[in-house]
Length: 323
Image (tube, rainbow, N blue to C red):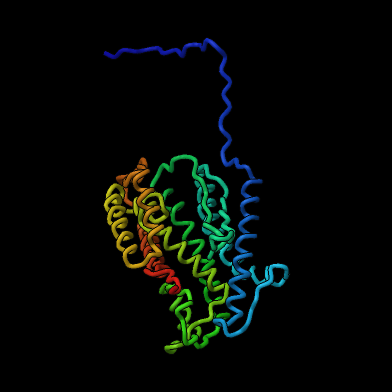
């Protein structure tokens, strides 16, 4: 015997007008404005990078002139490189969101002009997209999270070899105490060896702005691939390990704290990661298929993302000169 119920929806007392929210709707002008501002800030910084490159470690007098058109044209070597890498990264995320019909914004670029007394080494704080709704499945989460780093990496590799070829091997000055030193990721060392062979002691690449733009792009890729929280690496790790990814996040936070003791370059990034973990918690938001393992092809891609992290990582990114 079964009971049957007839349920009728009550009529509203007042008429209600409901308009569904439009998806993939952005203030396009704001995205273009931020992008244009970032072109200006990175081109300005790139002009100073080119002046430093032309000075050949201070051996050639080079006084940059902000009133010269050549200053800004030379700045495009750096600006075009870093914006291509960051843009490909974010458009990779955006394209994957559009493919799966997950509502997301266009990329926001963040300019960082060199305003005294605050110098700007990069001219930008990066770029990001806003994902405005939950991602329902692990496959979708993995594809959206991994699309950015892989797209940016595909742009960075050819730029790396072109930039390395444009960076001649020169003798270092006798006094290097006033020089800023950049730590080379494994991929940069490999490109230098394949292009120039073994570089003898006392010599170094005179880094062309295109190579510096690639260096920064590779560093940004490594930072995004950290297996922590809402970073791209955190999405990939959750898609692979499910709830066990929380343990990976906690261990990775501990590792970044250790890096901060090895190099002051990591202090700000470590504090940001700790703040993010406290604000959002160590657990990644669940998907509806958390218990279902990923397919073999995506597991191989996850291994590729780990290799990418290793190739792009350097434990001491920036060593400031002695004062």
